[in-house]
Image 1 (cartoon, helix red, strand yellow):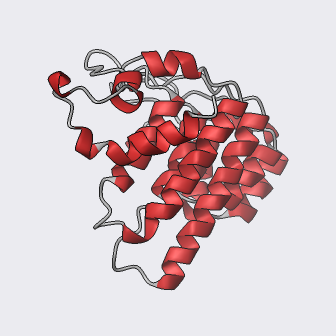
Image 2 (cartoon, rainbow, N blue to C red):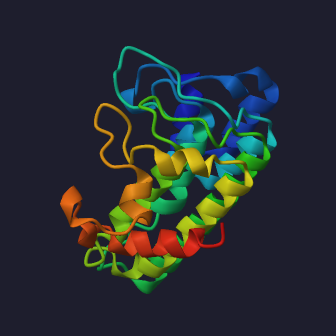
Amino acid sequence: MKKLFTLVRQGNLEELKRILSAKPELLGCVAGPQPKKDHGQSLLQVALKTGHLDIADYLIDAGIDVDFMEEEDDDPGLRVPVLFDAITAAIDTLCINQFASREEVQKRFEMSDRALGILERIIAGGADVNKRASNGLSALNWGLHHTEQIMKNAVIYPFSQEKVREQFISVLDLLIRGGADIETWRKEGSYPEPCPGSSVQVLYFDSEDPGLGINYSSIREMRDLLQTYFSRY
């Protein structure tokens, strides 16, 4: 079983196909404790987080569980469903520093688009868009926080600013069309317990209130994006 995850990390699609064709029951295998960073994850999760999107597409075609939740183990770290890994692939691929060549920027844009297509396939295949991470974080907030980290670092990621906004809007479209509970999302804390902070509604939608101690300048661009997007609802 460990060999399968090694093949995914190596991007060896042909050998992976050969083994899974002979033993299709291995499609549902879960990574063991080594390496620790893969422990409890599915083949699809590892393919997404390592950027081997051709393998991710193959695994979905083969019928892998697109609603899989990372298995619990003795590591107290964050566990997420496959859906979150696809969102991460679509957004974090756009962490392109200011020294990247034009060719590298274009390659990353194309990878982000492919990851977005895989996210669409995962949702169409039955992934629960309201499933949460082990700490209670929703898919909507997962996409928001990953996007905001790039938006807040425009000096570091100058080539990504327009594209990451475009991709985040596409992620919102997919999640909402898939049935994401946006009313619950707006009422809950931006981060889960025990440190929820202000609600999404207060942070991004309500009129600015200096008495709340919120650093609005750091989230103003995301506020503008979300208010424009949700003005249709």
